[in-house]
Image (cartoon, rainbow, N blue to C red):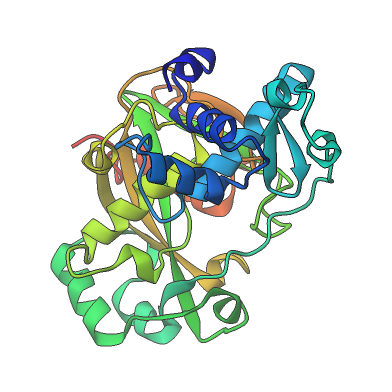
Length: 322
């Protein structure tokens, strides 16, 4: 993949896509590209996880949006990509040359089994604007009354709350913030608001014999960050990102319709440098570093959880560094 590695500035996902397309000489989906890479032995060892095809799809979409007419790739159908360079060949079928423009739309809710717990049980054990994390406490909660439920069903069930990671990316005294875009699975109420948290639902794939409790949460946080931000080249091995994640605690309040259905697991991620990461999803806009040494007096532009977190950081209740 050397020629493609250089062409895409060392982005392993884009280099992999180009290599797979060049070998197959036909349009491929991200999942098919990964199958070709694994079959032919050029799947980089630092790319991992159950949702690599989603990350690859996001990288391709971002490249096409950013480069526009200069993009190496284009769509021939929904979630199916080809190379402009190959399309110029004389023997390429006409259907391979047709550019599919599609249309922008909201992200659909991912089909998955998410970690939930009864609202009443959580209220008796974990309730408040910020509750510090204790491994033994979560082990007890998990064994006593947590279980997994279809995410779509959980969204409609008022008797349970879903666990979601809410990861704070920081470097020294700076905290990464962004504005939520329109193309997201979050509710209409959150779109357009500023946020300090990245992450998503904790599901059954995060838990196994070797990953329980804190390990499962940290693994989820690392996976979600790799999907939402371009971090693959900075954290090449599976443990590189996980080792930089530390669980802070929870937010369990009912102050909004969204909070009524979710409990946040707050995770501090010590980013390796102060360079501004690049977004990997349409739902992330206006990425910027917030200097925590200059206290914000007006937090009204932030979503509920983010406002609570910043207030607790300023008051010294939440410490990002150890």
